[in-house]
Image (cartoon, rainbow over all chains, first blue to last red; front, top):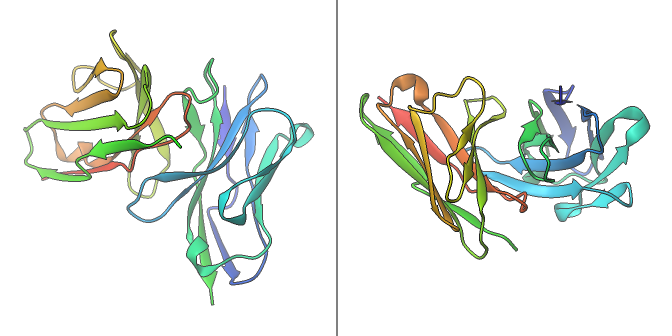
Length: 115
Length: 111
C-alpha cells in the first residue's frame, strides 16, 4: 500500500541555518510527490511538486526538493531559513490514476525557527 | 493560478444539527474535488471524492449517510455533516483534481 513517512516530528533550527526535511514514500509506480506548508489554523499551501523530468525541483519561498528513486525519498531543502518559515510541513504522494488524485499525506514535520 | 475557496471558514454548532460546507473552484472547472479531514495535530486524511453529476465515493470507514456530498456544478462541491456530534469537530479541507491546490479549510466545532 502507498504510504508516506516523515521521520522527524519536530525540527528546530536557527534563523539563517540550512534546512532539510525528510520524506520517504512507498509507491509501486512512478510517484507524484508534493510538499505543502501549513501555518497554524490555516489551509495548505503548495510549495512544490514532482511529476517527472528533472529530479531537482524548485518551489516557492526558496525551497527545493530532490527526488531520489533509489532511496524512495523526496527531501525538502532550504539553504537559509527565515523566521516566517516556522510552520507544519507535509509531504504527500498522489496515489490515484491522476496525478493529484487521492493524496496520501505524511504525518508532518513541525519546524520551529529560533532568532 | 488555480484558486479554491471554502465557506464558512469557521463554524460552531450544537450537537445534533447539520452543517454545510462549500468548496468552490474560482477560476477553473473542477469535475472532481476531494474532501479531507484533519484532526488537531494530525495529518490530513482523505474522506471522499466528489464527482460532478454522479455519486461521491467514500474512503473506508467514512459514513456516507453522515457526510453528504453534493457536486451540483463544475465549480461547487458541498459537504454536509448531518447530525453533528463533538467527535466530528475537525478541520475540513477540499482540493480540486488536477490543481494540487487546497481550499483554506473550515474549522468545525460541535458543542
